[in-house]
Structure formats: C-alpha cells, structure tokens
Image 1 (cartoon, rainbow, N blue to C red):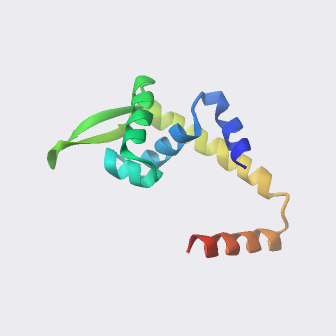
Image 2 (tube, rainbow, N blue to C red; image 1 turned 180 degrees about the vertical axis):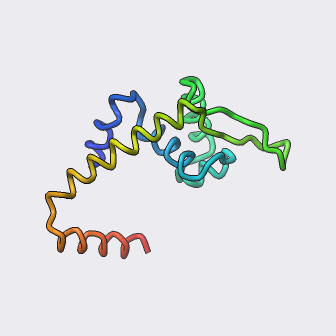
Length: 119
C-alpha cells in the first residue's frame, strides 16, 4: 500500500511526507509548526524541512501567530488547497478500487481489526 501511495503521488510531484503535511493542514487548518510535527509524528527539524519544501513550491505559507508573537503558523495557500483536494479525490478513488476487491464481510473484518490496532 505504501508503494501504491507513493506511485499515486507522482503526478503531483510530492513526496509522502509532503503529502502527509498537506493532508494535515487541509484537515485541521492552519497549525503551529510544533502542532504539525505532532500530527506527522516527526521531529520539529524534519517538519521545518518539509514545510520549507512546500513553501518553495507555493503550497503553504508561514504566518505570525496572532496569539503568540514567537510562534509561526503554517497554512495552505490557494494552490495548496487545490492540490490537497485533488490528491484526496484521487486517493479515495484508488482506495475504492483497491477495497472493492474485498467482500463486504472482509471489509468489515479489516475495519474491525484496524480499529482494534488503533485503539
């Protein structure tokens, strides 16, 4: 699945780590760098590198945090929002294609097992 996910991102020329950051920002809205690092479960330094790459491509922007002048917020640009929506749509279609091969009972079993592992 990881290989398929990486391949699915190729048309947009983004890495899985960049996609995870875009998806988190698309889902949660603007975030402090530290909060984004927590969502991504990576070190703050690595998050800064991912954000730097996305900012260079015009997909995110850094903003001052209005509640703490020492903090920086990361937000999607209009282009980043458009890209995130397109990738999500393509991934949903791919997921539907992949999981359509499973019977309804198998999908229910898989969902149950994944919930148990998550919990």
